[in-house]
Amino acid sequence: MPVAAPPAAPAAKSTAPRDSQRIYSIAELSREFAITPRTIRFYEDEGLIKPRRQGLTRLYSVGDRARLSWIRRGQRLGFKLAEIRELLDLYQVDRTGIQQMRELLRRSRSHIEELEKRRRDLDAHIAEFKDVETQVSAELRQRGADPEDD
Image 1: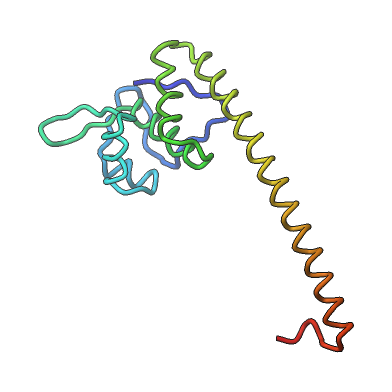
Image 2: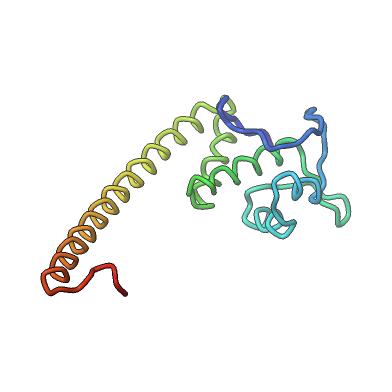
């Protein structure tokens, strides 16, 4: 299942060949992405990746590996699994990846906006605590107490 990726998408660390017919085991992907096989099976249960099966063995394609890379990056960026699924599934609708990238851009901008708001809120809280610190330290000095004594 191919996934469109902007040029800036980081590749996972591996020296394995990347031909389109390559098949990966769950152990290989676990090592490569530093996650447990259980995590990979969870992503499968959530419908984020769909490996082929040969008996009880899961066989992961290059597309599954690419999706796994996107899932991990999306999680690092703070996207919920449902958002990641929606973004990945857009590739099924538009194989050029343009719709997927536009939606990723829109959601990224939304996340940036939210993070900047949270940063402003944190800066306001820090400023307020610094004001309290200054006032309490001054009051302690005025009463003859050292603000640095515990």
